[in-house]
Length: 245
Image (cartoon, rainbow, N blue to C red; front, side, top):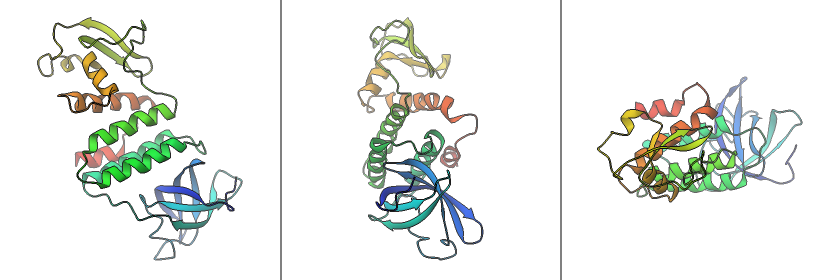
């Protein structure tokens, strides 16, 4: 597949040295998804070395019939999106998710637009990080065919009830196991039974994107870790290690 006649919007997800002056670059493009290309002669202060950095909107063309393409042309299509501190680690995390979960040359136009949107939000230090990350994670799972149904019991088809205690199987969904007499049990009471337990009111708040309710943000973060695990595999995410440091 070649796009030499029509520049394609893209971002760099990851790059590494290749031979003496070239680089192997994983791109995320709007209409052609994720793919890898050789960028010849871009290392050591060569032309385009600075442009080919993560979080810079690009227009690119490439050629080649094999899985490994050859980059033909690259130019910036906007100013670099500047991420600092924890927000830079969030950018690492997003890129690593896309590298791990997206199949080669599988188009995800909506996800590409959402990626650009969340990067822009992360660059705005006045906007909280967590809601933007959680929203993107849910959209990513939806886009690859593993979207979560948060308001329905996977076993019975019944609506999730706020006072219910639900067990989450990432390959099945949420199943009601018991009913509590309160929507707000003592801190860590339910969690002490296992990370896969969630209250119905937490699931409903997450489903509505209401992360401001007490405990909902942490529940959503825990949920996404469990949901991604079957698709990421056993190798830990390097970006999570950076957060811990």
